[in-house]
Length: 204
Image (cartoon, rainbow, N blue to C red; front, top):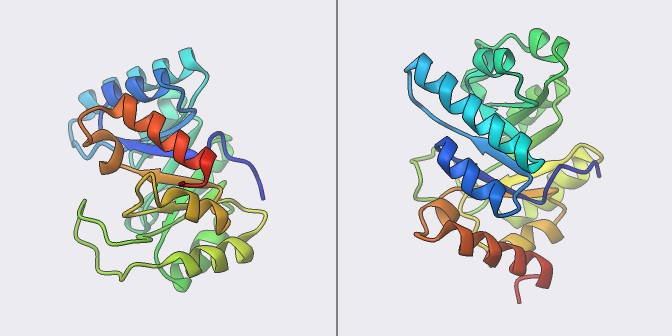
């Protein structure tokens, strides 16, 4: 299996959250900001990149691929809808690594054809973050897809808690991703440490 920068892959909504995470030792983090304000987005991406550079972390920019390229982001993550309008060839020419969201085998086939750096599968468990039309994938599919994709890394996302994270890793996921269980916790620094402890101990 190819190695990603970190087995813990939080998804932040602001540059402030990115900074908190990388200061706490996170080395692989996504900035997913749904604002349509281009100037604000550029400022957020630029600030997040500066924080990641300072702490030796890799930033993944969700969706806003043009700004990400212009600002020099090392990774871009695209959902299935984003793939319809993104210039994948341009992203590859720039040497930027690509992550792609998938939810079923048809999407998996499309994603693999794009030669991404990793593929994300979700939701593994039910999630309250947003309404999804897909049933929870379950840990058996994490195992199946990890074996199928090897050596391409698989990222598990959706409904994952610190206690559930080791199960995904043992099933073959290269990294586990979380939003609400870290940044909506009230104390993200302590929660990041909790995730580390659970991953290290196998969730015990």
